[in-house]
Length: 53
Ligand SMILES: [Zn+2]
Image (cartoon, rainbow, N blue to C red):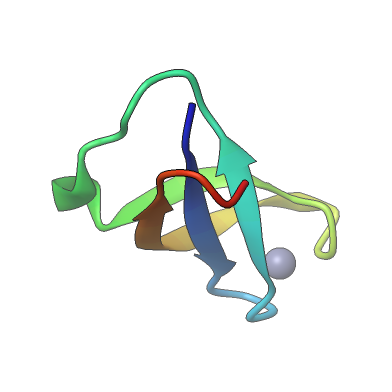
């Protein structure tokens, strides 16, 4: 199982989203909860990490 490296557009925090399915990289952005902002924000999808999660 891999994960996605996401970057919050509001605070710039990068973190890993563990997923059991690959998102499409074409999405470019993802609306998700940011623990640093404490709310849902748009995230930039940086890269898919295969085995360093
Ligand atoms: Zn944030």
